[in-house]
Every structure is written in C-alpha cells, then in structure tokens.
Image 1 (cartoon, rainbow, N blue to C red):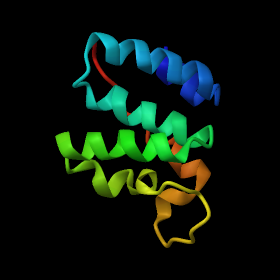
Image 2: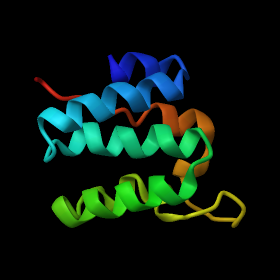
Image 3: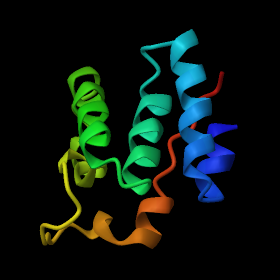
Length: 97
C-alpha cells in the first residue's frame, strides 16, 4: 500500500504504511528507501536524509540511484539526473512480501 500511495503522491499515507511495514521487518531496504523518498517529497529532508543513510549502510549500492536523499535540504543545486521530480517517481523500489 505504501507504494500505491507513493505513486499517487499521497506521501503522508505512504509514510504511514512504510512505517507499518518497517515495524514488521526493519531490514527491508525497499520499504526503507521508499519511506525516505516519501519523507523527502513531504519536505522532511532531515528525516529523509537520516533514513537514506541507514539504507546506504545496509546496501551501499543504492547510494548513486537515490543520492538526492542524502541532502538535508532541497535548496542546493546539483547535476544528478535523479533530482528531476518525474524521474524520482520512477525509482520506486518494490518488495515481494
């Protein structure tokens, strides 16, 4: 459900469902990265950055794909393509559970 809400830009609901998923399985990097993404889209850059850092500590390969989440603000210019809002929405991570 978190992914459905994230895709529909209902970020608060997505955060709620990802939080529920993480309460059941805290090491699910897909839920955790999408949790960070939903926080970021809500403008909660500090918590999104912290959630992202935890994901990268578990799976460093995600650092480049979701690097925009590392920032605690959305005001610094960057050359990363993933800063484009349309492209960010295409990076949804899915879990089988």
